[in-house]
Image (tube, rainbow, N blue to C red; front, side, top):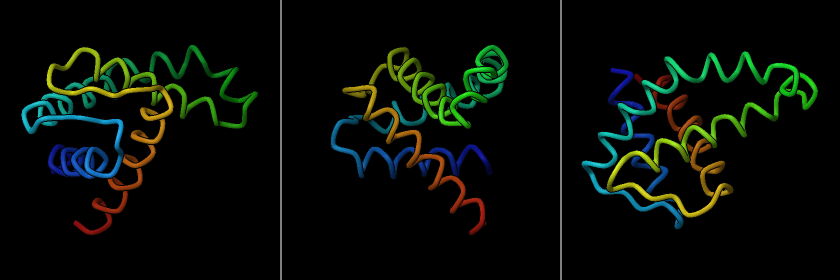
Length: 105
């Protein structure tokens, strides 16, 4: 069920943001890649950047999320994100939409 809610939240973010272009196949693959990144890479990167995250009162975690989104968009064909700022807003929209959809289900 988490896979479906993440895919829907990614679709919502691609629909809202003008700097994000994705095909339906790209959204499906991006969902799987982001789940894998959040499972394997994000804990390692979050641990390594913990002092900077504490220093910025948690705001650097947004930069880590945006970086992972940019990396995933670079690796997945059919998905393109124009700028880092667009990736930052994309990760924020995906997080909020995912939380709302998790409450609804």
